[in-house]
Length: 241
Image (cartoon, rainbow, N blue to C red; front, side, top):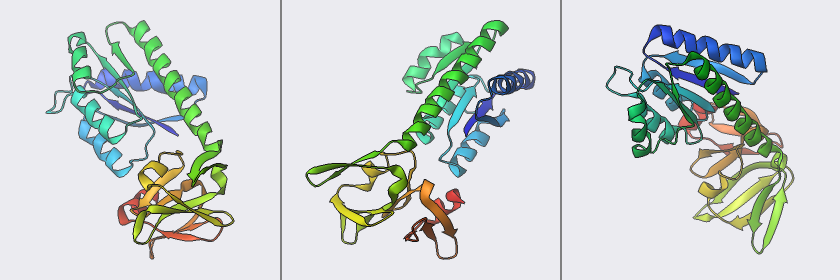
């Protein structure tokens, strides 16, 4: 699910943007939801801290009349949600260069003073964000490329349970499949980037979220569809639940 966030301190303008976004989602039947609309940037940051796996689209006013302005908020969001889509909506065109200074990498910069153009640009931004989300989601169905010794193997994501480091050697990994396992050299940091389904649940384990059958909170274990288990860290356990 693609989640939409608004940070706008002007209540009337925030309500207008909420209605515009809700109508656009409804008319296009997109898999999106307006998750949070607020004038307080900390509410968005706190949500992302609790839900780091968020697929977010962020509509931010530049002048929030708080200690943190919209560009600073965008920069912080970029650090917490690297693949998030950030759109600035403001009357302050002169502040555009600051988005480059803060390396925000915004999707768009929309002026408030033209309502018709604003509607078109918001709709276009949502459409582009949704298309990217769908494309990324489709990657879950693609075979994953593993370099195992001198061989390259393409393995269906549905076959992967989890990957773990070998005790005493963090660069030797064990790939746990639905049937069997394979040892190879690599590191978990690179492995977790191979698929959106992969999640670093512990310093020694990357799990395939698609194949988690059960979460044993008491013993802090994940139980997979083939019956195998792996440990999960306290923070990651809370996020998965």
